[in-house]
Image (cartoon, helix red, strand yellow):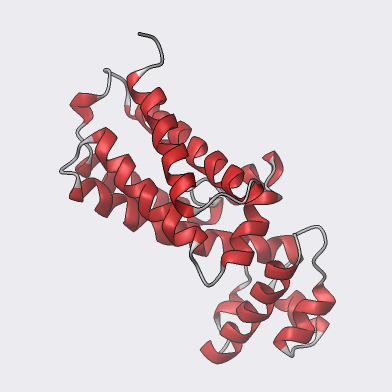
Length: 209
C-alpha cells in the first residue's frame, strides 16, 4: 500500500510515477522489473521512491488493485443489464471484461500479469476480479452489498452469504484462468470469450447428461 506521502503528491507527479511503473511492468514481469528503470522512467530519485512505496512489489500490487477494483462496477452493471439473471449476468460481464483486458492500451501490462500470475500474487494482491486487496477491505464490504442487490439469489441453491460469495469467487477464478490461457495460447478475443462461455455452462448447468 502506498504511503500517505504518495497520496499527498501533486497529481501530475503521481501520474508520472504510475506511468513510469506501467511502462516497466508492461515490458517486464514483476520478477524481472527493476526499481532503477521505474525511477528513470518517472524521473524521480531512488530515495523518493522509497518514500512512496516499500518496494517494487508494493507498487505492482497497488497498480493491480487500481485496475481490478475498477471492474467491479462493470460486474454490477452487467448483472443489472441481465436483470439479475445469474448465468446471463456472468456471460455479459465476462464478454466485456475479456474485451477490455485483451483489447486494452495496457495490453502488455495485463499480459504480463496473467502469464506470470501465481498463488502468492493471487493472495497478496487480491488479483481475483471480485476480491480487492486488503487495503480496500472497507470498499469490499460495499461491493458485496452491491452484488447482493443485483443478482437473483433464488437461482442459486440455498446457501449462506459467505457460500454465495465463494461461488462468485470460484467462477471468477475460472475467468482469470481462461484469460491466462488466452494470452498463453495467443487466442483471439472471440476465442477466449467462447472458451469461458463453455466453462461457465459447465459450472452452472453441469457436465453430466
